[in-house]
Image 1: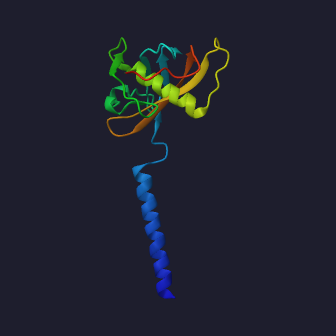
Image 2: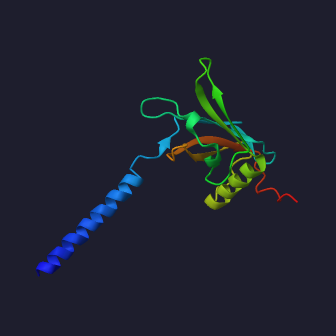
Image 3: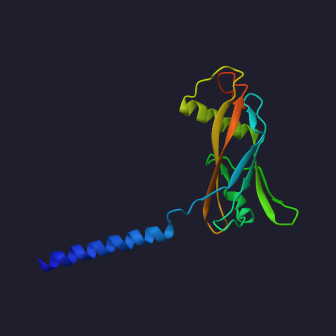
Length: 166
């Protein structure tokens, strides 16, 4: 009986140790949320797609900007589309204010059609834009995750995706 109590105690201690290690490696709230994410253009033409620019403002809990700490190689639109170009915008005081990421038109249009088909979004009246929330994810140089989302208005929806490029 004494051996069984020691085994249960050891097992409980091991479980607490594992839970503690997991908690230290991925603490709750470790994902930062962008204080602002804006897409340019705000209205996206599905049949004549253009490159999509994401303007990201990211600050910590002390309102210190973190855009200069974003790892450009980690940035992804909807978790899969890497940007073709990135840069940091500086304000008049010479401090970083926004991170810009430009995503290729063909990749953006493909992701949007995938979302539309996966979610089975029905086409309303042709002149009514469809609001669609898109997400941008990434990491800081120190490995901290961040995410942001914004609404993109879709229009010129002809009922189905265009044919794939040759």
